[in-house]
Figure (tube, rainbow, N blue to C red):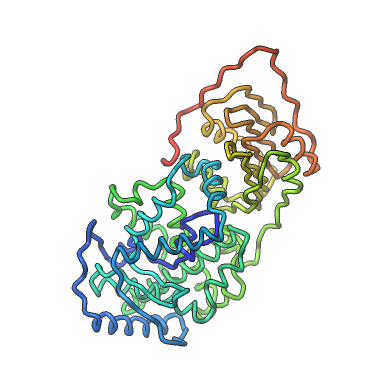
Length: 468
C-alpha cells in the first residue's frame, strides 16, 4: 500500500505516497483519538519546529537541503481529498481492474471487496503526515500536537531530501513494469525514513538504529498492541495489513543491515544507485549485500496456451513477499515463511473471459531445490483444497494434482525445481504450457463414465479467508 504504484498491492502504491501512518506511532508515543479535534497550533510554532527538525534530520542522513520546502497543516478532509485525487490520477494510467482480479484469484481479498473505498477509509484514518513529490510539499495532520508532529516531520523530511537528490518518482517508476521490484524500491524509501526517524528520536541518547536489536519485532508488537479493534486496520484482510506494513517493517530491517554493513548514512545513499530488484533482497538483506538475485522465470507462449476467448490483463512477478502472502492466507505465518523463503523466481499471468465472467490465473514458480519443490507441492495442494471448497473429479499423482470447480479446472504440476499452477483453465491450457516449457506431459486424467456425477469433496479443514 507510496506514489500510488502500479500494481501488486494498492497499499504499496499508497504507501509510496511517502506517508507515515499512525500505525507506526507507538514508537514515538503519539496517539490519535477516533474523532480528533483540530490542534491548537500556531503557524509560527509549526514552522519553527519544522525548521528545527529539518536541520537535525539533514545532518543525520548527510543530505543538506537543496531548495526551500513547502510545509503546511492539513485537515482530515483535505488529506482525504488528496488521496482520492491521487487514486483517480493513478487509475487513468494503471491496470486497477487487473489488480483487483489478481488479488481475488490468489485469494488475498474476498471477491467483490470494495478495495478502493476501504483503502481511502484506512489511510485517512491512519495518516499522520505525508510528502507530496509532485507538489514538493510536506503535509502534517492538523490534529496532532506539535510535540507529536516532530517524529512525523523527521520521517517525511527524509522523503523530501531523497526526492531532492534522487528524484523519487522517477526512481520508483524505473522499476516498472516489475511489481516486485517496485515494492522493493518502496521498502527502501519507507525503511530509510523509518530508520532516520528512529535515529532522530534517540539522538540525545547516542543510540543508532543499526545498533538496535529486534527493532522490526518491537515496532510490530507495539503497533498491534495499540491498534483499535474497531479500526480499519484491525478489520483489514491479512494481505492488506501486511502489504501496508511491509515497507515500514521489513524496510527498516533492510536499512539497518545496509547501514551496519557500511559507514552509516553516507554509504546507504548508494542504494539509490544500485537498488534492490526483488522483495527477497528486502526480506533477506544479505542477498542484496552479496549481490544475489534469482534469474528470471520465463512464461513462454502463455497467451497461445490460454487460447481464444481470453484477454490477458497482466503478466508480472509475485516475488517472495507476494508468495508468502498467498501462503499465509491459508497455511499460517510459520509455514508461509518457511516455504516462501525457498522462492527463487516466478512469473504469473492473469486473464479474463469475454464478458469478464471468468478469470484464468497461471503461475510458474522456481524453488531453490528439488526438495523445496516437493515440499511446496504438498503444501500448495493443501492450499488449493482449502481455497476451493467445492471440488469434483479430484486427481492426484506424484507431482501432479487436479480437480474441477465451478470456476474451471485447477492444476498443480511440479518438475525438478519448478511448479506451475493453473486456476480457471482446462486440460488443454495445461498441456500447451507443458509443451511450451518443454516439460514431460502431465499424467493423463481418467475419464468418468458418461452420465456419472462425482460429488464435490469437502475441504480437509474449514478456512475463513482473511483471517490468521
